[in-house]
Length: 113
Length: 114
Image (cartoon, rainbow over the protein chains, first blue to last red):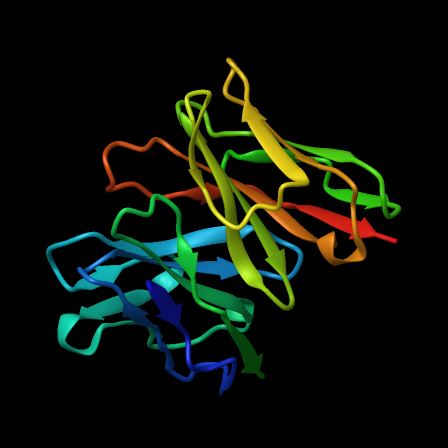
């Protein structure tokens, strides 16, 4: 079955530190991949997407993600985290015959001052 | 602001009741999706409409139904509500140009069933 896995339920980093959030997918072929962020009480905002081509994609708010086919991964990174980045992050995939997004379970990010 | 609007923002109702959630997609988007976010199930796809027609169905209960109107807004109808239906319901929209498209989410409607 098609699935998206985010192994880390909760990550805590200090402000200014680097960040990497993990995402793995299980699909027959490479799906389209997305990262969304959800701030408390808010909807989901699209950070970045990968459809094809360059495996390092840049997004909004200084985020980037790297697609690695060999590892079936699409990890999200940020070189220096700001307190306003505290939120829940969702990896999602769109592939196969499905027209809808399949979401991972989310990673809650806490940023320490 | 994604351009997708949802009303109401909050809804509190009793078990057994029926409610309607409304969504207006971004200007130009023809496809509307409904998702349910709950603590135990996470984010789950419910149903998709494209230009007024049902396109795909996910984990949507028979008590739930949706439709998309000629002006492209969509409504999600939830009936015979149970405590377990308490969740955040999101609407998303996309242009749907082939498969290479992204979905933009509204702020959600928080439903509380008491």
